Amino acid sequence: MSSPYHAPVAVLGAGSWGTALAIQLAHSGKPVVLWGRDVRQIRLMQETRENSPYLAGIHLPPNLYPEAELTRVVSHSDDILIAVPSHAFRETISAIAPLISPSTRIAWATKGLEPGSHKLLKEVAQEMVGNRRPLAVISGPTFAHEVAVGLPTAVTIAANDSSFSTQLATHLHSGQFRPYTSTDMVGVSIGGAVKNVLAVAAGIADGLGFGANTRAALITRGLAEMMRLNKVLGGQRETLMGLAGLGDLVLTCTDDQSRNRRFGLYLGQGKSLEQARAAIDQVVEGVQTAREVYALAQQHGIEMPITERVYGVLYQKQTPAKAVELLLAREQKIEMD
Image (cartoon, rainbow, N blue to C red):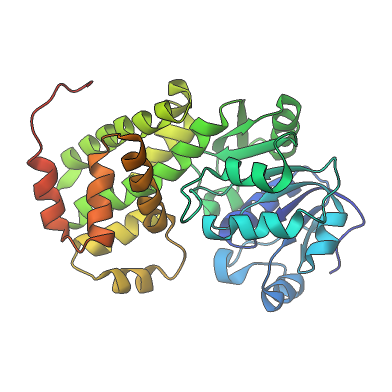
């Protein structure tokens, strides 16, 4: 099926999350274009009307048009919503930059930091398309499958232009999907990135058999780490008490639909990094993000002990048991310090 002549929003990234968002946008009744780089996958989606590798059994609405030609997608759409992994974010922005019109607005639902530079994705986008263009980030407690099948979900949309966040919220809103708007792009971005690192930690703790007490303490102290980083980068504390912070953190640390949590579970159960990656067989954002968040913490002199121990397991060959030992051996301190 070919794409329509015009669509209000095009989604770039035909994985589980991009497809779920495209399905949600299609509930408005307006055309939605979904781009993916894998031509064979897109052709199969066009023929079968489902994304079987990622969301098997979920039918694509008739007004959702899978498309593999990026130029066509961009030229037929008013606004762009990017849903690719963080390592592909700059490449994707670079590819669309010469194709978009001056009026095209760009949003993303990617959670993470740029590999190597540990920049917020907002910074990457501003470098590539200018800081005067309306930009937005979508985050919150969301599992793709639950969004795709229409289970009740709420998210935060933060933008540098209130009319953009409001219109994007209108496009996404339905009886089962509730978007809230914000101006705090930094806070929403930090929440969406750091929670993946903490989910790996929660999975490790559960894999070691530590139980509910440990998990609750880890989530709480992890939120404190997230707030420290958020503060030094200019984000708002209130944002992290909302959907994009605490909400997403609780979801990702407690449910096995989270790839990051499952990855940590495998490590805690004794699997190697390679074995854990193979078992997940999809991108685990927390692995790369742990390195970037650790680098940011070091750069700004921030204490993030849980993040440090996850980094130690992933990049310094610490065993999960040793990481826990080092955490518990830290000196006593005031809780709110």
